[in-house]
Picture 1: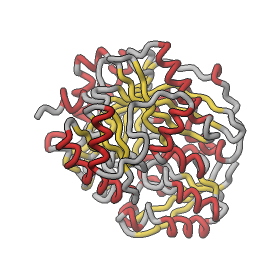
Picture 2: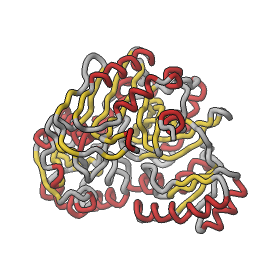
Picture 3: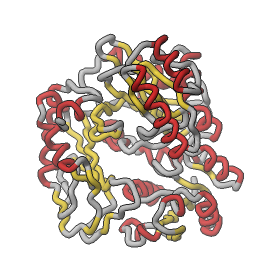
Picture 4: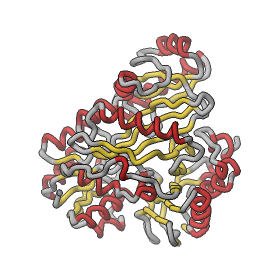
Length: 449
């Protein structure tokens, strides 16, 4: 096991990593930007290093500064958290060349699975279902039109190196497709330094189902069941739950087995998530992508399985064997997570940064609050608006839902505007109560006009 690691991230995920490390007896070194100088989790780290000004490009995305800090702090490994450099294969390769362990999968796995086109080719080769697509890069808008005529409208353009909902455009006809092609290409170039696009048949109103996996360096791989992540706004998740509601046992087994088969094909190790689209109308699922990192929504899997995914990441990166077998992993009860973002839903989700003057997080049996904020904390403008996550666990879905409603009522933060009210409205909606929703639900039912 490592004795000292660096956390190349910020916010609630940095705190989550520190907690796991403390329980394993691992020293932590936290890097921070000037904007995060007053972050509360910094006092819990064993060491702290400022790596630059607020803009992420000068701090949390600055590989030379992060590596220099790691060498100065004499750490054995770096945990990238999620976001920033977490899925950056070049960063992982730099870590390896500097003899610093990257807490995640191998560089080779990241390179293959991070390229959406190659990942889909792999999926097809091992008989994991994929939606009809361009079978490679679409070079021009004219090529896109030809592909669309073959696979049929509506279609979706996607960045080959994409993630986080960026570089995606939907088109229902030829004119729209032509006008959106350059937009998607430009966004992909800006976001990922890679303008390559591919195109898929758009499965409208699908469910977003993902499978959590763990693997060791000896080839042992298990899944920790699925998560329902269909409650999204502009491809950004809002609420997640597990088990997925109204998912029959046969479909659940097929999806989880496909996830295992795909990651085994690349000798994957550490934590990862295989994502799928579920077309309920045709009772068919399709491979979407692999996230080669820990996910924001990992706590709900921890709640129903009793497995600490961050500890497993550290153990597996250190070369320990996975002493879990598939039969050992069972789901107990039901868990829901609500992401709390400092945004104002009443004004088109306008960011709500600034000082928190009053704050009361929820608590009680079966309620978990994962956050780095506190009363008096100044929410910065430079980063993602996520300030915390409320996670609940109940004996069944009804109890879990009631627990989350109660937790949202307890939650108080002032004057910051948040998405807590939107989450409360979603949980009270009849479609949510019945578990009958898909990725179009929030835009269609909760945000009229």
